[in-house]
Length: 102
Image (cartoon, rainbow, N blue to C red; front, side):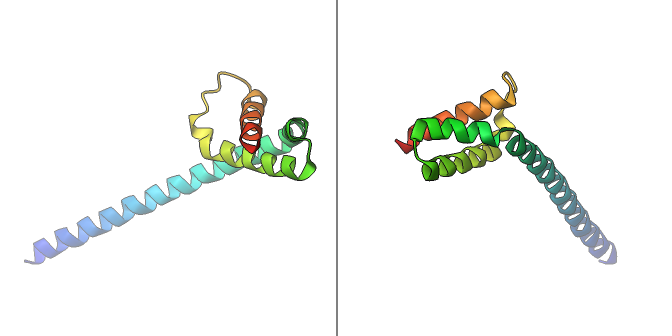
């Protein structure tokens, strides 16, 4: 009985450790992703905004479209295949976002 309890406690502890490790890995991934998006934002926000402004011809809507563009980039960065530059990828997202606003 005592051995069974020890095995059960060991199993629970092992599962807890695995969950903590998974949480730490996810947190590290989220921080890396946040750093990437912050870098993309600081480098390309003006380009994205100007493209949105050209499409939408309204400052407020262009700002909204720019925000949506970077949110989409954040959500879908893991599927970005890097077959084109970051700038090209972001501007394509921005153009598609602006089309949705029409």
